Image (cartoon, rainbow, N blue to C red; front, side, top):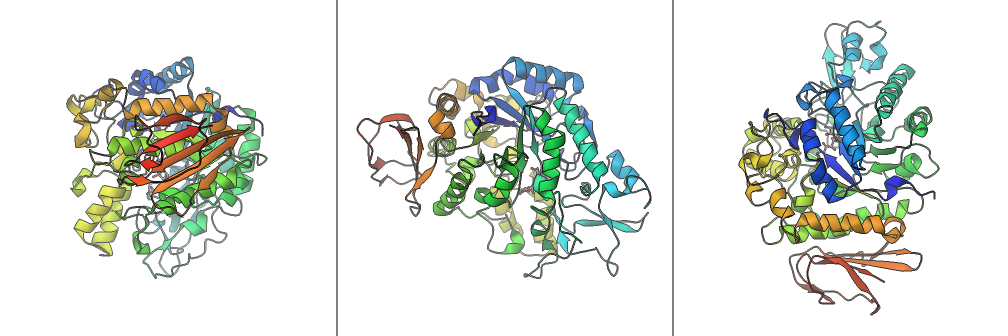
Length: 556
Ligand code: TEU
């Protein structure tokens, strides 16, 4: 396989509104990112993925775009974006933008036109249907509660929105829609942007005829995902995107693909697929689904290690030599890694954060570090509904507690404390000054109260910090073909306490051993005396004895 720059790269995800505020309005902005580039550079990453920065009414924190070619005023303007891009490139870093083209904002000019009349030239930019017996065209449930259909009085039809009603889905069957998307992609690529993360890109091709979804639980609304994920025409659309745009630039593309399987992914990212470079798959981040299917992700149960290992190993093996994995524990939509997969108690937070980082970064694929993960930042554990700002969390609370009365307030607040997307969106913790140095104004979202103890300033002074541990992992990847290109063999898959696997490349071997428990346990692995310990989260090596959350990597 021809080697590509993004195979050795490590990506840092910046959620701009929570990263650094430079003008005291309580919202992070692009000048703030510019000010913090030296910090990101020091970590050693190669690429920065910026969550959406385009003009937006902010119904879904920028994932509802009203103008793809202008910057959200609260983040700055195109001038400061150009400065940021130039400085990132001067520092030897690339920038990946967030491409949100499954849907637009209802304030986008295309939708404003589309809803004016049934014969408007933009009508078929979106998905409009007649109702059925005075109701929505089908039983699909929105990710943000309620139906995926919104009735529009003026033209007496419903339009489709998989997410909020302010996020109408584009009609990708319309070649004019695709042409407009190619144009807006070229606009950013011609400015020098180095690639895209593509939002729910596997939802573009909806089930023909938009039929009802299976609804075995007889819920008020059915799970829409089986009707929109990995649809029949998706390959055609991605192939056209590659042919018309991506293949003309040396750029990186990663598709966010909820519920895609390795088989699907190989169609889109296989080395000869000529579509995308890699996918964000969801298997390992959807393991904690509630036993009650009406509750979906809302749960506070721990994840069984054997299930986690199975999910990650499946992708490592399936794509080895055929495609390319993205490696991530969390992002702006997920709980904080150390709270969901590790142990965020004061005693074990740092140890388990380093253990999680090692387990993931020694795998085959491109690692993605979500802002604050390199500090071991934790869930916020808000305990009042008013503290939450995320549309998904608030809508879920009202649907599940008030409307369907499935669980009570206290239970749902426990679920939110574990799984709300706001856990990842609390402002970056820079130091122990007011508002953690994030803003001199009123932060748009409450800070995590532990910023006095967990912050970048403290970690930059401590060579044993999680920050410097991530810096070492990134440095190891940059220097090692074994880490980048080695194959993957899981050891002891049924072991529910230890995650162990081997990587092999041109006669070199890496052995990764991680204790996922707070217990002192013992495991024996055959390793030659010539082995070296590449990285570990304990100073000494006690052989078969594994201390709480101990991780170590042998090379030989
Ligand atoms: O998320 C897609 C997606 O699947 C989400 O519904 C995610 O699974 C869920 O929020 C987890 O609880 C993308 C963006 O990452 C997300 O921020 C947007 O809200 C969503 O698409 C709509 O654009």
